[in-house]
Amino acid sequence: MFGLHRISFRHLLAVGFLLIPALLAAVSVNGLYTLERLLAESRQGAEQAVADTLNAQRLAERTVSMERAARQYLVLNDQTLLQRFNTAAKEAGEALGALGSTPGLEPLGQAWRTQLQGITEQIGRPAGAGPASAQDLADAFRDLHGTNVRIAEKVQQAGEARNHVLLEQLETARYRLGQQVTVAIALAALLASALAIWLARPIRRMEAAIVALGENRMGQAIEIPGPADMRLLGQRLDWLRLRLSELDEDKARFLRHVSHELKTPLAALREGVALLEEGVAGTMSEAQREVTRILSQNTVALQEQIEALLSFNAAAFEARRLSRKTTDLCALIDKLKEEQRLQWQARRLNVTISPGPVMALVDPDKLGIALGNLLSNAIRFSPMDGTVRIDLSRSANGVCIDIQDAGPGVAAADRGRIFEPFYRGEHQPEGAVRGTGIGLSIVQEYIAAHGGRIVLLDDAPGAHFRIEFSHASEDR
Image (cartoon, rainbow, N blue to C red; front, side, top):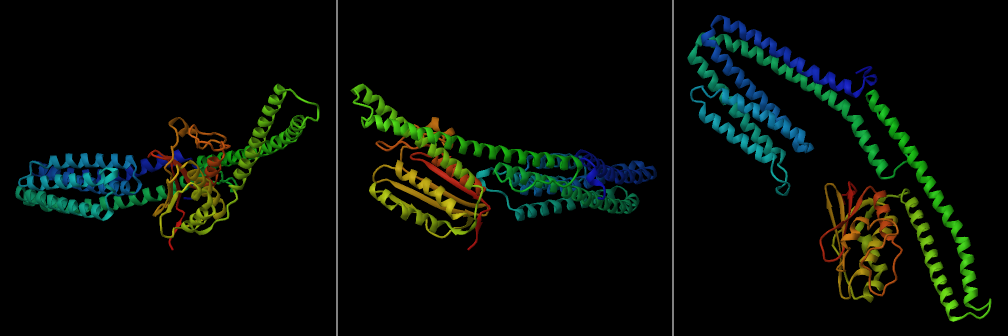
């Protein structure tokens, strides 16, 4: 494929879509020429035989197309492939219907339709019923191919009954045509596979680059191989990566600067209020003391907000610097449970952890901070004598951690903003100090840095948070 990197993605698609039909069209034209020669020798007898043979071949070819689309749909779950399967099935049914006048074909036609209905039910079963297995699908198509063979044999027998001489000539032509079709299909499949593989590489690289940008992994330059327009798009994505990095650094620098600049005058303000409260500037009236008390409360609240802003900014920065190692998540959570023993024992809570080791490649310190915040929130919002459940599970796709309490849950109005920095929900524990609203934001930062996600599930009572790490699990 020398020089293909100079061609655009659109041109390559056009070449592929035109070249493959042209190859099949050449075979079809050659087959039509052969059939025309046979029809000229015995038009009346050969006309029906040729039509039946073509329909049988069309049925077999559409069955192959159906099988290819079904196998790809089973892997990729792409609705375009399902539509391709349905189109091929419709065309195969039309081909079968065209063979309906052949004597003795009705039982085979009914069997073919029944087998097709079974295959359609397999690939179209609902999500809750589980996907069809590749072996079941292969067995079903093997039966369908067997029925195709029997239909072709029945057509052949009918042709023999109509004209034995014509059948001998047609058999020779059919064999040659079958070879040509097989070679053409093989070449078309080889060409399509080569183009698909070559074109899929830049798409996968682009997908990985976009995921990296979404997960705030800005350290690696983006370079997309392949056609010219795809490489240009990769350059644009790398430019976007650099701009996002600059903006992120500017934001962090601005937050650090503003926060530190605010702390100095705020400290002076607190000192002044303290001097007023101590009566250094003279005795104050009751109204003046009330004013100084309000000032003191608000300066403390403002200082807490500034400290929270610095903490959140530091957490966002540290989230990009992971030190991953194989970690037993169950042991990590059990350690966090012991560290917060006084808190949950004071509320007489029952904290349960699902048994069994679950290994994952994570940063135990930063993940421990995230899980510790979630456990602390669950303890804080749980009623006396309540239960906090922590469940771990592992699948082929990764690791799942569920943390659920029996508290008041999250108000419906707060669900869309629960992970926003400094946002505090409507439901707060009675008599507790109101939080700063950055705990869940820090949790989300650390989870996203691991390539995972955290969601709030809607299954009251209580708050139910789920953490999902894709492709993070390791077999022990």
